[in-house]
Image (cartoon, rainbow, N blue to C red; front, side, top):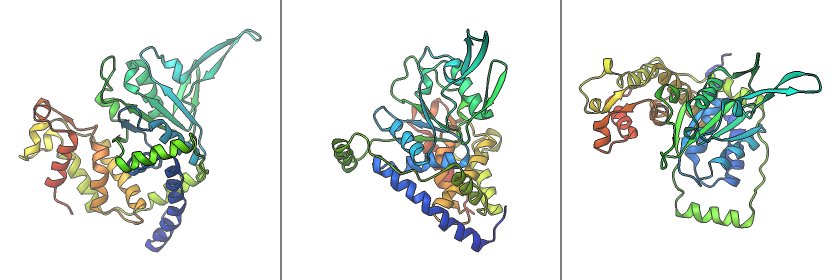
Amino acid sequence: MSFDNDQIDEKIKTAQLPFLRCMEEIGKRIVGQKNILEGILMGILAGGHVLLEGVPGLAKTLTVKTIADVFNASFKRIQFTPDLLPADIIGTMVYRPQTGEFIPKKGPLFANIVLADEINRAPAKVQSALLEAMQEKQVTIGENTFPLSRPFFVLATQNPIEQEGTYPLPEAQLDRFILKLTIKYPDFAEEVEIIKRIGVENYIPVNRIMENDSINHLKNIIDSIKVDERIIEYIVALVAISREQERSKASFVRYIEYGASPRASIYIYRCAKIHAFLNGRGFVIPEDIKAVAFPVLRHRIILNYEAESEGLSTDDVISEILGFVNVP
């Protein structure tokens, strides 16, 4: 599907109205956290999954449940624990004595939006089962293969504080997530507003704004957003400089153990289009690339011991990369 520039601008303005209504509805329950909300919605529109890192008590579950309500989508929450089995999330075969047959019983993955709470608390087999379902959009129970719901979106959370008894995700599995978002504490005014809302009513109703057809319509509009050849080269330059064979004599080079894969370039390209849409533009500019570079790259660039010893984070290195590569 292709549109001319005038059609693109008009379609974006029209499509933004229900999206802005979604943000208003979500804001009835969630105070602040605009970047987190936009990041989660970006993951849904990009057809990917999001890894969210934050301490307990920051309304991660409520946020995802609210988005599911506004999108009129089915929602399931899975609490990952060390004794969890793959069958607990995918499903299993159940014997029916009346007929003498085994029938498949589908697990909680069969929902539009799935919250995988504290994914690093489950063993590797369970993590692999979830990530395979995320990649293939289907699961096999017994001899039967079942497609997952459409849309299918996973938000996995990690607690950055407690690391005892956890099974950290390998880098190859982290690469399956389109974005990694870090959720922070609310500021003083936001926390005051949170207390006021909870004090009035424990559950605040929201209206359903989006349907599956609306999401597909938004995706078609986002696909039509223009990306100049120089912008694409800028994306590749940012990602390639993190790799050993492409590194220059920049100061940040010595802190990087492993760079980002080409999947990072694809996701920056895809998310930059969505960021342009959120800002009402029919074309991508360098500021869109800079805005999405952090959540796309922060779990794909692996730092070495020297960076850790100097107290540098991945975001610090990404900032240096953005300052080093020439903007078109």
